[in-house]
Length: 214
Length: 239
Image (cartoon, rainbow over all chains, first blue to last red; front, side):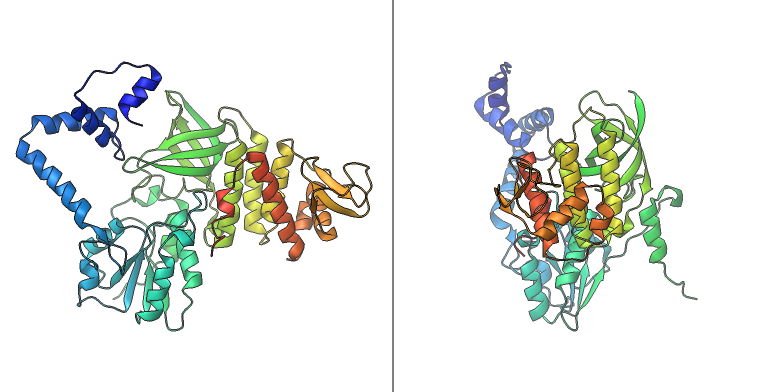
């Protein structure tokens, strides 16, 4: 609900801003993690700052809104029908990494360890929110796994309950001859102290230990 | 801010800001508690996996000024590893948590509900049967005062030939007073075992259509009591 409407309905009198300012505050206030005070602060920062800077922001927002769509192959964000990764012919077409969200693609790309392609599910199976497999891009994944000559699918969903449920479901449905289904390893974060690790994480780290090479 | 300790089960979580979560607990001494776990979504969080849905944890919390408390420390009471490696069991746990979340109240101690939930989670880990969830639902409804008369007809007390179940009257019906949904003799037996305190015997029964009948009945009764659909029961409806 807009601040003005909210204030009017609760009988609170608000300072009178010009309509365009109030609309901008309300627009920022609708963004995730931005409360009314932050929305006001951002608005006044923009109004006080150099006009060219504000216009750059407007242009960036407008350009992203108009240009960005979902890649028709992997459902990552793309500026054309296919994203840059799906267009890249140097990528290994036999390796497919399944992630929940487009931002997970960026996180894995930063590691520079993976040279295959991606498939973005658009979320994870969540019993308590009622999110089932039919609301994710799982049917499309099965088609890709069957038709694109993929030999390994790496399940890179988050290591939380929803991510685990999704991985278990995918393992069950990706029962295709000649296809290896693997799960991203979980264990201790580099730089952390062992004594603070929880039992489940530490247990998995021990379970997934590896032999040190001479 | 006052610091207090309690033991509880994580019912559900909501993302908050950059890396925090609001965690909803069913606690032993304070009923439903909603608390913020700061930084829990970061890989180096001190909470690790301890505040995942279904975790049974020993807690230290700061009493917040508003509705939300703050989680200061959490230690696992039971790891529940077996519940995380089986999709079917995960669904059963989620249904139990959603049901408890629907009935438990904030600020009202309900140690019986906490004990029942912990027992339910242990039963899911121990017994691989679809009956574990309906058994939990019936016990929960009983604790809520929505019990079922299953030893005899709700009208005349007749103990033979119980052929239907009337949810409005809260009990089974004989052939003469047939009303409501039809029910098989095997399902009647299962209901009598569960509500007669012989849950372990019921859970040891082999899989069969009567179990699905009881499962359907339990979810229908619970959804009717809560006056809403349980999302977790319908996640795989369209697959």
